[in-house]
Length: 319
Image 1 (cartoon, helix red, strand yellow):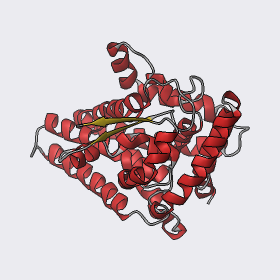
Image 2 (tube, rainbow, N blue to C red):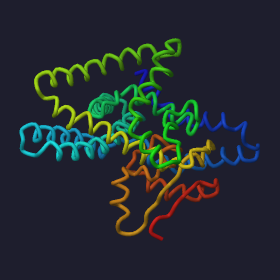
Image 3 (tube, helix red, strand yellow):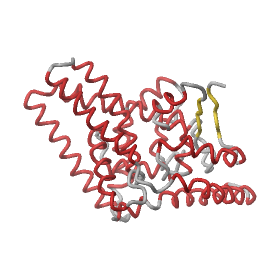
Image 4 (cartoon, helix red, strand yellow):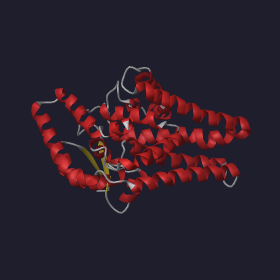
C-alpha cells in the first residue's frame, strides 16, 4: 500500500519539481506554466486510469521470450551467441513493462490489480538484474531532479566524447548501484529507505545466489552468455536511447524543456515508435508519467499546441 501511495504522487512530484524550479524563472513564465498544466490536465484525462492490458501482454511476452530463448540455448537448439543477441534485445524491451510498473501504469487506478502491476515489475526487474524497488527509487529521483548533476542518476551519461558516452553507458549498472546505496541505503533516516534497502539487498542476494550455484553446477557459460552479458548490453542500450539521446543537451531543468520529442511521420512511424518503445515521445512521459507508454502519440496530438507555446523541443523526422 505504501508503494501504491507513492505511485499516486508521481504527477504531484512532477509539479512540485516545476514549482521548485520556479525560483529560477520569471513570474510571468511560472504563471504561463501553471496555466499550461491546467489546460493539459483536461486534455489528458481520457488517457489515464484504465488497466493497461497492452502493457500486461507486452510484459508477459518479454518474460516468455526470455524463458524460451534461454531454454533453447541451454538445450543446444540455438547457439549461445544467438541466445546472447536475442536475450539482449528481449531485455531491452523488458525495461518498458518494468518502467510502467514503477509508475503504477499497468494497474492504473484499478487498485485491485496492483498485485499484477508489482508482479510484472518484480519479474521484469529480476530478468534485467535491476531490482524493482531499487529501479523505481532511482527512476523517481530522475523525474524529480531531471538533468540535475547531483541528484539525477541518469546524469551519469552527460558526456560529449563518443568513446566516453560508450563507457558511461556500459558502466551504468555499477553506477546505479553506487547511487542507490549512497542516496537510499546509507540514508536510513529518510522515510521508507531502511525497508527498501533491506528488500533490495535480500533480492539481489537471492538473484546472485541463483547465478552462483548455476555456475558451480557447470552452467557458468550459460549464465554469462544468456543473463549477465545481455543484462550489461541491454542496460547500455536502455540508458543510451531512453536517457542520453532524449535528454540532450542535459542542461534544461524547466518542466516543458528538460527532455525532447523525436516524432517520425510516414509509413515507418509505427515501427520506429515500437523500436523506441515510444520513448521518442519522452517529454510526454515526463510531463504526464501516468499515461501508458503506447498512448504517448495520441496524447501528444492533444497537447501539442500547449507544448509549442511552452517552447518544448520537438524534432520532426521524415518531413
